[in-house]
Length: 173
Ligand code: FES
Image 1: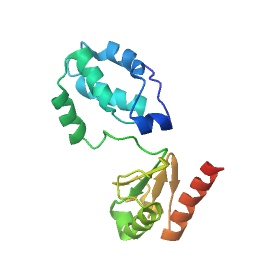
Image 2: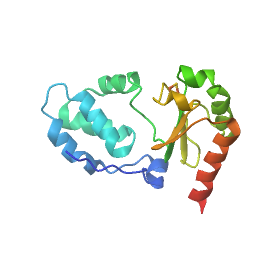
Image 3: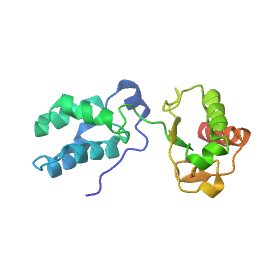
């Protein structure tokens, strides 16, 4: 089943925390009577909205009878789930061994300082979320950063910040 994904969530939705719950209907229809449906429902919901909106938990509960506290428990346990909207650009900073040795921490710190957020947070304008992740699989390019599908390697802190600034500039034009 192909699920329509909102990319990114509309700004007013981010601000008001409101989402169009009708987008979940095909997902609920597909999984509501299946055993072990909690994870696929949460994954599918995140696929639609980019995160797990509060209202979506209530909708799943209504449609399937799954308990809210169990769903929250699962959603907070697994790192794959987000409870808040991600930024339009997700910046993944590789903190695997090769990148760590090549001082990715300094690059990450520089980016976080520049964007005035902490690891895992999203900028106020909703443009960037920065996350530290494990090996991105291109260690020969260490230190590595990924933004969307684009991989940037052999970075210095200065280059990394420049890349972020360029994206912001093109978004503001
Ligand atoms: S350790 Fe960073 S890409 Fe492998």
